[in-house]
Length: 286
Ligand code: ZN
Image: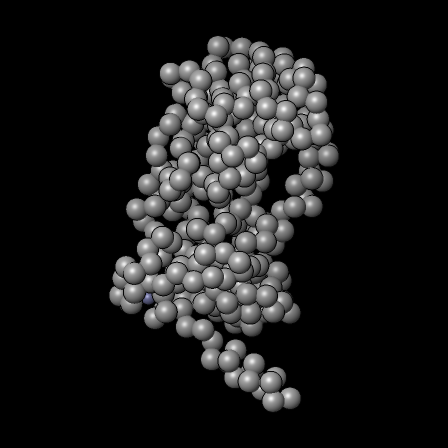
């Protein structure tokens, strides 16, 4: 699934082509894309509108529309925005023609992606209900994580994946950041010390920024709008590298499960906290 760096890559590549341009026509070919909204009605509302800005929040792309609406596009598993020179891509679900003749396609093999066309105020409410702070934005630090994790016994990885606590992190970048911060993903979030949270916040940010610099990771379906591949998969510390040596200590990386997700970690750098085991035995005796 595209995570923050992949969605930000799409935004940066698409923005110069759409910002300040008008939409000439939209054709929604898959009614599932617009959910409860009639796709013909969405097409009508989009036609003729100028796109002053293409923004992003978490894993959502936000097409701002003159007149006070926002088209919220979530790529889910396999959605993508493409501008192929060769015309229609595989799995095309919608086509957007701009007034200057530029053709954008929304493609989605598994069809879980969504479009929500909302008034700006509704869009703000929609996003605020689903998303915590931006981890690459100003002010994201250990104190933000301390507030989010306080008193929580859930594994730290599960909370990193909770979009309401921090926006945009998925399975790949959670594993990468936890490895770089030398934190076991099963560690109860509320038990992390201040210094660990400072390091974790810095490593979350570093992993996401490196992902953006690499134009995302193309491990399954992800491509840039022009069809190019990201290269972050070549820089993974642990993700998908089970059996290979940890870049920090050389111990073989293992694949396990945490928070219901396949999880890669280094047993050398990311020790399961001892106190966790002692405490559980103490509870058993009680
Ligand atoms: Zn290691």
